[in-house]
Image 1 (cartoon, protein in one colour):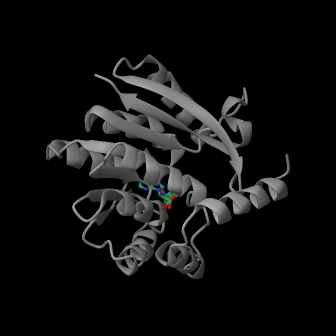
Image 2 (image 1 turned 30 degrees about the horizontal axis):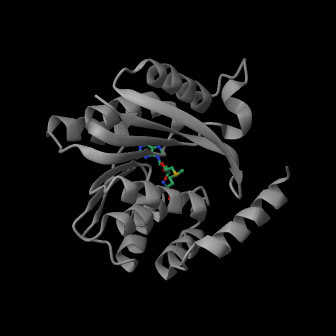
Length: 222
Ligand code: SAM
């Protein structure tokens, strides 16, 4: 395995399977012009999230970690004009770029970007009695993955899917003496997820244009 070959293979898959979407392409270009790190999901992973949302017939999606709104636009495409995406972002500059991209894609009435540390917004949403979500995508600071998972579960119903991105981190997850907060946060997440009776969960490693990583998914069953 080399990153060059994995990237080339991803390009092949994307060329063959993905419809060209000018709004998604424009979002990536705008992110680059605004100097946002290219840490959005890969196009084929975006399409996978879109398909998962469609399979669930999701209408309400919660995303933690907006960046430039690339994955939020994929979700908006899946839920249709009556759907709702709430996406949480810490950095006002990222949120500004995301709102531009979302408006350019025609989804300004579907996607709401909330700016603040996500744990704070999540606590407020729970206090307000926010209606449960059909799908939750956790893709922010990995340190807080345990808190994000607990909040996601609190705002779920039976049938909600919780997806957590970047769980493998080039194998760093199992580095025995790691003190990195992202690694420790994600390990804690797996401890909680593995013991949680309300979900059935799995995790899958991936390799592609974004390197060696993976995602976890948990279906709420009670
Ligand atoms: N989901 C996006 C996509 O695929 O297009 C990518 C999200 S990027 C990997 C992670 C984002 O989480 C960054 O924009 C970062 O600023 C944001 N973030 C980091 N810490 C956060 C926090 N405590 N609360 C909310 N967002 C946070």
